[in-house]
Image (cartoon, rainbow, N blue to C red; front, top):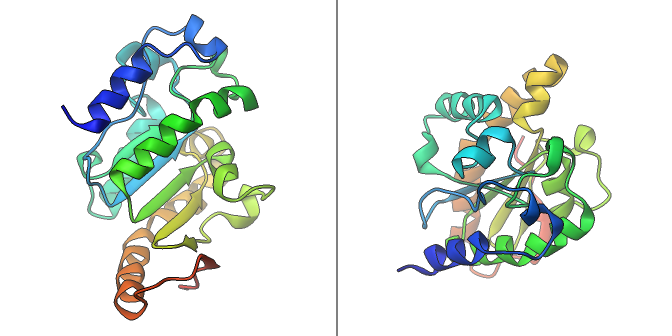
Amino acid sequence: MSELTELYKEIQVCQKCILSQGRNHTVPGEGPEDAHIMFIGEGPGFHEDRQGRPFVGAAGNYLNELLGRIGLKREDVYITNIVKCRPPGNRAPQPEEIQACRPYLDKQIDLIRPRLVVTLGRFSMQRYFPNASISRIHGQPKRVGSVIYYPMFHPAAALHQPRWRPLVEEDILKIPDLLAKLEEIKEKEPEPPQAQQLSLF
């Protein structure tokens, strides 16, 4: 059994916050254990809670479509959320709920070691871009060590507010260049700086 599978079992019995009381299933995440790209959303919705899988509703279908535009399939990337249980009524996750789940997300990142972490929506963005506004920083990558953090609007936002859709689609198209740029940087800099904005475009 892999460490990631063991972590999933731990999440399945988690009682660390109030979200555990109303769930049908936990939604730890899914994807290759050596994925180069990790997408981090907000929290499970109705369909995710029923199936125990992330991004399987309308937003998930749209994410699949976006991945196809850059030659990727859902199975090529790792997908998770900052909280692993559905907030009631799909409300926003509360700070104490995000904090309770934080060790699980930290462990997932440590085990998978993605090269690119794509934050979907403002709640996952705040983990890496505190006090920032997603409408201002979306599509602007930041490198910390050997990982690029890349903020995007949540796919659900694009579905609910059509004005964001062109921005989401523009930002997803930058991902192949981001990965190529990171590969260049790794070749040139054996010891990358701790944190810096990554200028690509």
